[in-house]
Amino acid sequence: MRAFKVFIACVVLLSGAGAWAQLFQAPDLVITAVRLDPAFPAPGSSVQIVATIANQGTRTTNDVFAVEFKADRFQIGIRFLADLAPGQSLEIPVVWEAKPGETVFRITVDPFKTISELDETNNSFYQIVNATVHEFTGADLVVRRLRVEPESPLAGEQTRLVATVANVGYGPALFVPVGFYVDGEQLAVQTLSERLPAGQEVTVALPWAAEVGEKVLRAKADPNGELFELDEANNAWTDYFEFAPPPNRCAQIVSLEFASTSLVLLEEMTSLPTSDLVALFIPAIRRQMERDYEGVNVRFYLRQPTGIFSTVFFSPENRSPILGLAPLDFGNLRKDDRGFVFVGSFHANRGLRLAPPELLAILFAKVASHELGHMLGLGHNPNGGIMNAQAEINPYLVQNAKFRPEDLEYLKRILPLDCR
Image 1 (cartoon, one colour):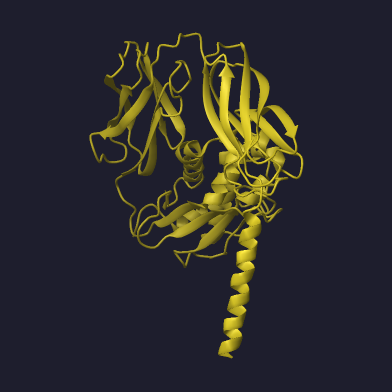
Image 2: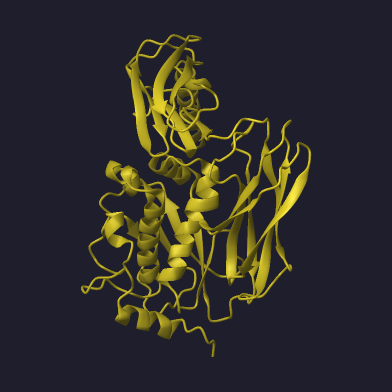
């Protein structure tokens, strides 16, 4: 019996080695460079975007593949190529009419996955481009720190969000605008009209009433793309803060967890870079769930909490038409249930990629609130609302969905804010 087991193990290892040998003989498509002409466009001007596509693999591409250009959510060009040999590169141009402010370009080679590659994770390129009437001065604004004054305030206490902004470029910033955000929502843009010379820094503050629980606070210099900068991708600082009072012993703690592969799918759906998904999109999901559960003793976390907690896991699985799954725990007898939202099921619906990211965040939140409702003991409600048995995937229709009064009454009864 031992000899038989050893033989099987050897077969697995040899098969694995053969598979690896085959994997090393494949194309690998990447975007090695992107240039704009003009590099600093004015609003309404015609801009040529040239992407350099290279095959860094060991074999020629054996099928037709695409190169897709997007400006924010919208496709501005697509080109089809074939027979790109190892070490070969091509320049692919498209023309775009510059719109005012900040635009995030996403260029993807082989978006339809027609080519089997050595590395499928290096096919996309992001670049932030500003179009403005202001001149290029060589400025480069960065946020070096974001703090709350006073430290550790109680929820409801008046505070200040204070951002330290520096100019790390070689020329002056003509003015300093800074946007402040809480859980993905912009509070305000504070603008200092004074010039900020190269090598200097300044503090920008915004009054704010602290909100209870964990919050994702963000400050971003030049949030509307009004200034040309040396680097448009280094303008933001994001941090997690938690404001008292802490959850009481009767509270239901809920962790929202995202698989790394789910973030890849969300990138493709929203055309947002990972940094914006983490700082803006995912916190917006949590913020909407807090609104859905207003008046119910539930505390949501994006970082893993301590103690006993339930989890809503955002899985990359595609189980269409199922959008989520969770156990029905009537009375909320368990405090560590685990439910699922299937990001892959959303990703499979290509029509959702036309919806604004802010509405997509609400749609994900409504499905997550539905699954959490099951984990807290709610069944499907034939009268509709968040616990509607028939999932609605149109973000324009579900953005105002709420728990029906009878469902909300049950939730408040089993999880009252006053712990007794």
